[in-house]
Length: 360
Ligand code: PMV
Image (cartoon, rainbow, N blue to C red; front, side, top):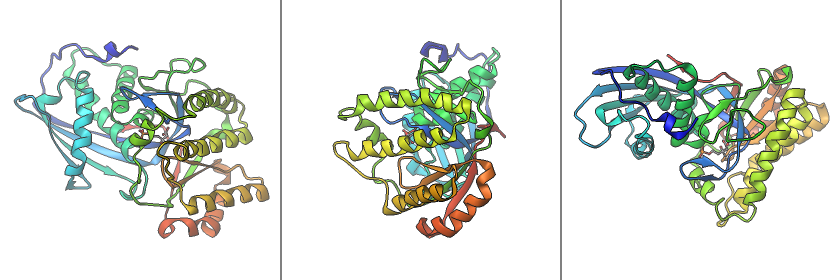
């Protein structure tokens, strides 16, 4: 697919008003995306597990109006008007207008809600942007005379979601999604995420993710700022190469079910992401003392029990615990006896690997 393939032919149908609703999950990267170039293209390929319980549900109401050269929309979060989100969506609409040229012909009411608490420190941009991109694709489908097939629909929705928030393009399908061209992953592209195209060993089926909410506050450094600091980063090129090599290594791990190697790659990726932050100019630290307490306890627990639990981190202090389903009972006991003490107000979210977005 090329950029030009995402520019639609003039729409032949007209729609006065209507609404569409999509739910779309969050995702957690195993090999991380950190560093981008314009327009929102990744410096390295990344791969993620799609989550299931943590999702955004977005209803897009549209009403035809006179095109006055501006976007017209309202955002409603959990039933309340949220003007704070408007500038982000305005930027998103500007970036995608060439690909969905009906945007200025409608007034939109974007009603959105997350299944996870708003101030949980879990980024809602991946689930939120992917849900909105899917809603827009549903509108485009209704405006088009030509049949839009499922593959194109999903690819274009992922392409649009990427322009809203890079990692959002990995939320549409599951259980594993790759974003960023990699010569060993057939069909992979910098423009959109694709479903991981190979067989995955049973060891990884229905993997669990418990998110320990260490710090529910707003991030001090946005991911946009962090990505940009990779431009002059002394270790950038090495890092991009490492991520590329880790995708190759993970491909073998996913095929063979090698849980020990999985742990090594995933934990190294998490720590490298934060090492990049700590060695940026200016440097910054997003992990908290409790993040390290949890990591040390995971390492002890693994040593004592032979468990295959491991951790990963996104751009914040919260810890994602990844483990095979058959360990769920023991791990949940370990969490409640050892780890809850390090979570803000004892809060954590139990999730598992899911299959992506759904139209409701
Ligand atoms: O999609 P963004 O711009 O919020 O960046 C997300 C970056 C990480 O979550 C840290 C890593 C990743 O690949 O999801």
